[in-house]
Length: 111
Ligand code: AMP
Ligand code: ZN
Image 1: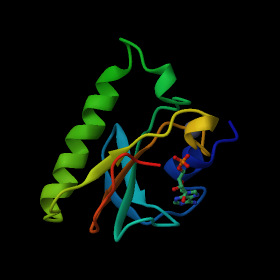
Image 2: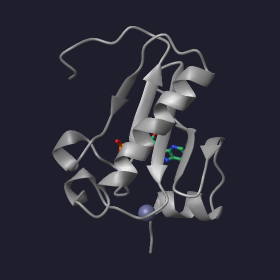
Image 3: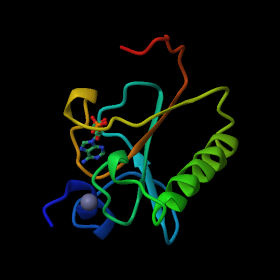
Image 4: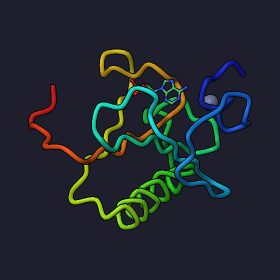
């Protein structure tokens, strides 16, 4: 499958790895929008949050568990987790991913 993040998982495209286990991979975003900007992705190819169901939702829980672990390890003082789902929400890579961002002030509502 021609998926950028599957290629990163397979090691075909290099990444700056932050965390890995059997279910997820976390790596630094190539175009960081905050001092800390890490992408956390399930290793299973799921196109977007719109594809989450009873069979795979455990992976999302695990992503949040990993986010908390990374935040603790890096002593993050507050963080934002973002998921863009679909073109209108700004999703550019069609493999579900969660942006873990920290190290600056964030505004709300998000643009
Ligand atoms: P989204 O716009 O929510 O789909 O997020 C996709 C993210 O992937 C963007 O923040 C990009 O900067 C990031 N990205 C694209 N290519 C790479 C790459 N090769 N390594 C790391 N991050 C990437
Ligand atoms: Zn993929």
